[in-house]
Image (cartoon, rainbow, N blue to C red; front, top):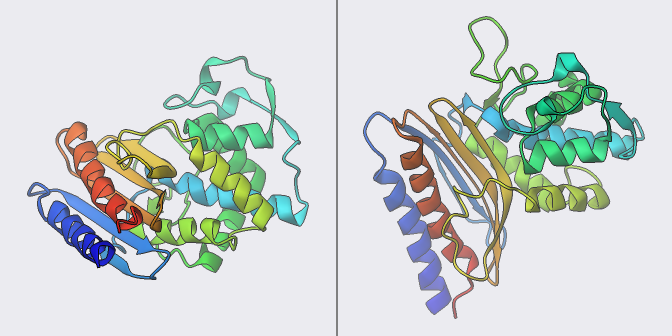
Length: 269
């Protein structure tokens, strides 16, 4: 009974936190409990500029390409000057021509959100193939429109867009071993486990709750999506925000939602 009440309180707290967002801001929320199948979606199909959250779809498409034998994780790809991009990551500041394995590029894309490594992964797999996997998974309006440009795309080029529901669909497919083979899904989970940007969903997680996921940040945009795991099971969730005047306020809201969602995975007796 205590566990059931704790979970009911957790769902209610998530709604309460969401309702506290400042006027003039937009938030898309999607939460899924693997054990019960219970879900919550509030503006979950509203599409936002994806920022780096779209990289989990790129990662899944790369894993599927490995399964098909199109490429090997050990294939070495050079860091070309024309693909270098400022922003998060390290490759922009390293020597052009540096050759790294696709496995390493994927880790850099995921764990430290390296934009140059992301463009290498996109060029390797192909935008059409990446979106085809998204359609198969059922990600709705979540869509890769272009390679990374280091800022919100100006008018003209196709946009990279994401919805909270679409990101949770990708996370569910990775957790359930349906995004790619079980071996490759385990590899993707290990990349997400290594996430270095942990100031949003996992910022105040209680002891015994782990996080793996992917953030996204550009001016006026702060997102996080991931899986929380604890004694009571696993929770997939995504929080996408826009319009916060102060990015720290967005981080705080996302963190409060993460803490409330953690109670769903805590397994209180």
